[in-house]
Amino acid sequence: NTKLLVSILYQPTQVELLDTELETYIVPLKGSVEVNGKVIEEFKSGRLLIGKAANLAVPEGTLCSIVKVVREVPQ
Image 1: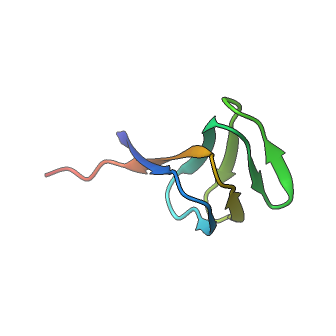
Image 2: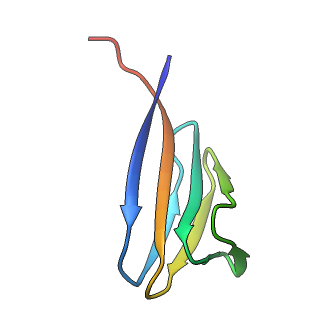
């Protein structure tokens, strides 16, 4: 069983992402972002697999979502 954790980045920033969960998706909603020197265009996605790291650059005027797939903990 899994669930999604979503974060929205809306200010210019540099972030180091480390995936300790199942996988992480990077989806620019407005503008484009740069991940490890590669550009991800608006509404395209990039995927970060478990145990991998990436440097994410979000420029001014860009809106980007980070979606993590995590294991659901039974309560």
